[in-house]
Amino acid sequence: MKTLLLLRHAKASRDDPSLADHDRPLKNRGKEDAKRIGRRLRDAKLAPTLIVSSTARRARKTASKVAKQFDYSREIELTDRLYLSGPEDHLEFARSLPDSEDRVMLVGHNPGLSQFLNALTDAEMELATSEVAQVELEIKHWSDLARRRCGQLVRVWQTN
Image 1 (cartoon, rainbow, N blue to C red):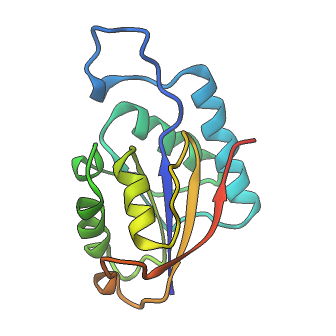
Image 2: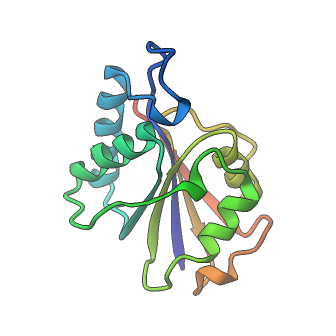
């Protein structure tokens, strides 16, 4: 059994129009929401064994703030494969995860992250900023991850 935690980055700022999309920072509200969702996951004993984030600043900072709440001791892995990627890209990335990791958090962006969630489960939803979808997968190897409806959406964790 594998668990996938799909976290949409926290609320980002658009205050500086000179910044590239990739470089947008978190708003203060986003920073607090990221901490709050991290505490909720910690209290539920859902700390991931591996965190992988998009390289975008807002995703990296979200991952870092969440990880600090449960004393994640590893380095957060960064990949541009999760930056504004579609559901097929997310699937291919997840299929390449090491089998030694049983609970993995992917930190990314909509619409691709929500589309990936909907493809894996029977959900039809869009993750809001700082929301985490907990998906249980009846697989032993990440490479066994199927293209459609192979996971069960257990819960969507929200900051409020």
